[in-house]
Image 1 (spheres, helix red, strand yellow):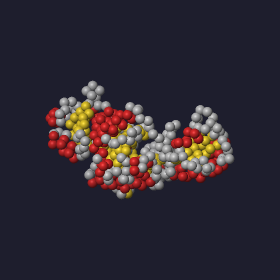
Image 2 (cartoon, helix red, strand yellow; image 1 turned 60 degrees about the vertical axis):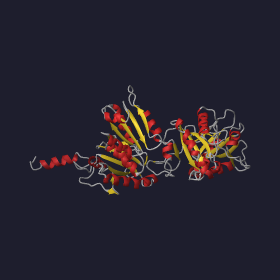
Image 3 (spheres, helix red, strand yellow; image 1 turned 90 degrees about the vertical axis):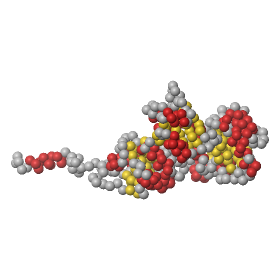
Image 4 (cartoon, helix red, strand yellow; image 1 turned 90 degrees about the horizontal axis):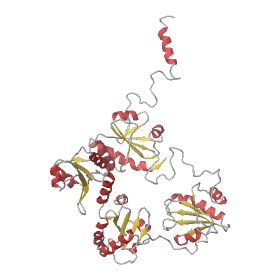
Length: 525
């Protein structure tokens, strides 16, 4: 063979060994082109499958939002996300914010297990396989603070009294860990908790002089606050060490005011307090006689700290939904109600006497000791409740109708504001008309926001339940397609669907927008 032909043949052999249409050394489609710059929108990196790797290499702290253009929650987050990026950039905090259009970048959405929008993930030091889920607030300052506590210290090291007093004086809630050995594992646990408790400012010290100045002789976590008693101490168990669960409960309990007024700013913290019993005092704050009751309410609160959260509701403010939940009118004020968030059971004072520190204390003790029966919300039975094809049920006639052993009763539990309930209303009316001549079948509905039941609680809308004729108080929950044809098959088959029917409504295709996507805190795919 000619020596001149040998290089040509070798080149042809090398090309032949490569996949069709790809020359040796060609880059993978998922790799970024050399020298490519990552585009930005409003200070946010716009990533794709081609540029994520480059971003991870260039930015050691990278928060990535997976969003969908049609997602209402993503649209609400967008200005806050950009504002957070600007705040952090102005501070020269070493962290970068980015975003990925999930539906357009399906490979990335699947790689990181994205099932709802928006989903945010935090990448450290280019680690692509183990990002941290973002668990912080959705406002600019909350996002910025969550990131600050990950790229910087989550607690300030305090060396002297001046530094400690400056920290305490600068915030409403300050937590200082007094540890004799800062290398102890309890300190690591304390710092980990500080990363996520964004509504409090954290410090720590090992200085003996600071122990002495604050009257401490052993490891203690101290909560300083500019209200109520001003300070609360959590002693670290010398044998067992720091129990994070106990410390978290302590901080949540003692960071709440003894009495909190309910409004749009405080509602989230009230429900996040992990205190199951809430005592509500309904007052008209424009009336001096009502305002005078607040002193007795506050006087009763300390002995129930951690057991009962004391809340004031102003009936002339924008709190109609709270009144409705307890079945009250504004004219009922002043009055007390206690609710257990776990059971949703509601309690009212039996005697209806004046609201004083003594009567409040007695009422709380009676409820906690099981001496007061809960009450159920119920509307009055309408005179024409059984005159329409769809029968109207309330708490007071539910048991008699639903558990009638001679009838098969199909009930829709709804909320007047529920979009899904409104959408299925025509099918429910049509079903009632279709079976109105069947003496053993009743189609009914119950407003579950105004009527409560002993038999069970309703937590979502619409909820459909079938009560078949016969003894035993049997209840079957319907979970299939909400249309006339499927409803009819369900009734004709004695409360079950023929086997060829799917057991539940089919899920939406992956990465397509759901109907009514503005409900909830995230939007599922």
